[in-house]
Length: 436
Image (cartoon, rainbow, N blue to C red; front, side, top):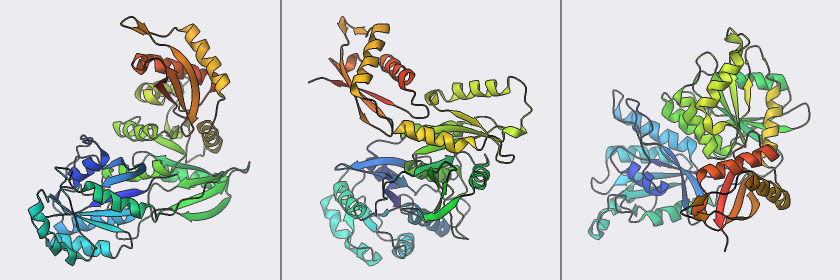
């Protein structure tokens, strides 16, 4: 089930990034260095009183050659399209500006719930200055201080009230997948080729939280699939996604809604840093992953081409050693017919459950092969293991001391579990817990 999304919007220098970091619970480090675009990461996960959600900082466009109001409008449009709830940030120090009024009027027409937060209200005396913001027509302004964390709870309470009204998607046996990757790796061509290969279109389903169109089809074996549109269909005249920043945002949104993610590489160009970065998001989210090497038909090949390419992939994507690789061509449809079957297999592995008795036999055999480590004379003892979750599969291992479970030994146990049960295409979690 996809988490709802909160988008933070507002003019520059009102403290959006500070509040974004507060909500995300950490100081998000610099991940991009693109001229004309903010360098703060713009997509993160938040949690408030047990309610998980995604949070987007859309404010990241610095003033360049384009008109000021156009930049503000673009921020608002991104928030409207991507979010379930929009948080408009204004500054209590400067009061209402023309830019605040401009973006408020855009949001007012959006039919999305908008919460108005007056930032930089750092002391009680300043609360008397927030009443002018009622004129924006967006309801009660909430005084906050991003630098001190004051008032953030009131904002998040309001946000979660609106999240409860977001309709939930019914669970069924449909497998949802998306294609992500750099621009021009051939995602659109692959989508068209997959649909042309299957030829059984069921319906066009509106995205649960935005205006993108997701396409459903049925494989010849009868498995239902839903292909999530990572492009995010936009109205004409609203093509503002001209940097990788918004490409990342849309990819993150697609990943969140997917069961399986196809990471598309361009065989002609090889592996780039952006490929590794975007694939890392899918891994961290616990999604099933398939690495798809497109445009394979364009390479001059010998007996070692595929082996050498696979070695490069395994070297650059060490954290995706579980992911199968498909070498395809959208143009010639080479091996394209294998993708639905691979997606179905990975989805089954994401939902695979192992009985505790069988799992503990594997764990005990692993300990016999490689005894548990010691630290300062104290040995790690493993008492019991059980599977506690799927999507991705997660295993809790009860031990005498959690600190004694070194990362390398946890990885060894993970490898033994994979050796016994497969789990191709899905990350698995091994979680040590102290037995009470």
